Image 1: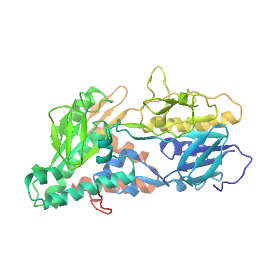
Image 2: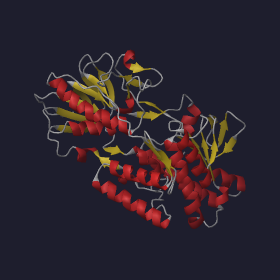
Image 3: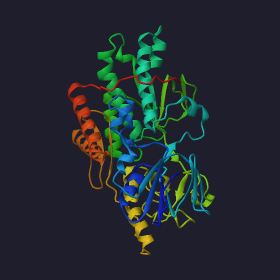
Image 4: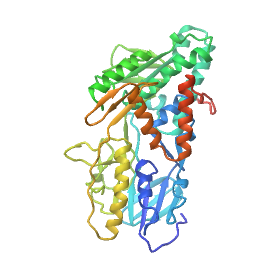
Length: 423
């Protein structure tokens, strides 16, 4: 892999997500050699993927080159490859471009879409975990508008204009609101030959309310906002089958739709090679202690969504969102330096900064420790937090410009079919 030989301890980090890049930053120009490995050469700001899917933003505004992050890190290297296996007894990893030894290994591989074993849904639905997948959804939505314009029958037209989103967590709720704004603001202006009333957005949720991870207050507010936008909510509803045209559920509800977007859950994305005891079955997450060390491996660590650190406050592990990943990455960098210097490690304590979701223009909900609110102020807070969390000044400027333009003109400027999607 052409990594220079060095007398410095080598720390190999697999994954350039929130946990990975914050760990890299905390080790910048320290007395260690860092090797960052990812199968993509950019970091993705996943909380805004839904805006790429709904034509609100271009992908380059939420993606940031990993090499740009480490350009001033003299002892940090990046390799574009996929890790195939870990050989812990040799302190070595096998990748698609070669082998690499390590002194300390950090797994920050994140999650992948969870289809709960349903192969039909996996083959016919649209996931939204990566930039290419978000672009596929954008293309499919716009292609369906074009096909609806030339459809021969009302039933065929409605199938193209029926959008089914499975999973009413923050991702599903935000995407439903964004597509509803396409219906309310873009469809009447761009497609004069289509009736906006023929377009329907269905949001399906297996739990009894939307936003199950958030408070009852947030759920009620979000339901009000979605209803106002015209989104049809179906709670206590599971998708049993989807063949590309018909959505079959556990109830009498059956929907004809050319688009089913799967936002119903995630599962860990582990790497082969560690003992079964290291991985928690079902969750597919590594079992880690309070220092993020993987069970049974003192020199292997896991951070972020792939790590499950059970505690009294979080018996099922921390929520799989950005903040735990960022905080774990920052602390682990300091702890690795302490470990090298034979100093005691500091345990991880999660500082919950709250949770939030936006449901469209002037509509959002925020859950803080002592306050819960929704509406315009929550929407403003959501925008500010996400804007400041973006990696890179350029990305912040571009996103702010796009949001300002969209707000003033009720427009989504990125409605381009750059790469046509084929089912």
